[in-house]
Image (cartoon, rainbow, N blue to C red; front, side):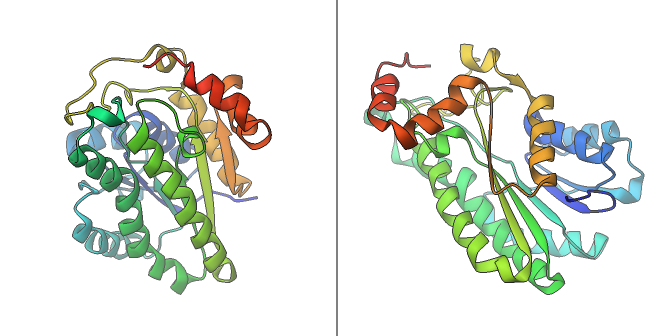
Length: 266
């Protein structure tokens, strides 16, 4: 079972929601942290909340869609901590729009944030993990990475892509002692629906009812930490309905498709 004491954990999307909750949970577990998001002031706030000594937490603001910044950012982390034990890909953005209305630019934005940014950072971090003969990628996917639902076509596509990429990486890197955990949350009470893109790329601006009733970010983070501690390859986190849907698709797909088709759009 993994121990986070004095391990270096790099978290993207660390300024709020699940990322912030993970930072606090991992700080409590004794990890050293690298906190990345676009908003430097929010990262500094999270840094203070961790209560970690100055040398044990690094604030590294960046826009993860600036792919050419990935390698220099990884080099800065190595310069500071000499290693990277865990790379937590949490930065992401959701969607609330129909296929018929959604511009191609919105789809590009979703893929850049939710898929290509993780690939860019993974390729920047992987050489160091190969050199140190160990490491662990923790990829925050979604139940949407397993099931397509209305008004999430681009988001679903990006999350599905994560599974293909990181399943391949896990197989390729097994002999180098590099692990991958794919995390599939259902409805978690964060601002993900508020910040979701509509058909023109503007913010949805509303909290979905299901999101409002979802698990807390703190509970989600605790379950993620436990899954990573046990080196799970894939984990589903959420209420009974969301998790059950994954198994319905596997064993009774026609039933699930009928349920999804009748789902009220949010």
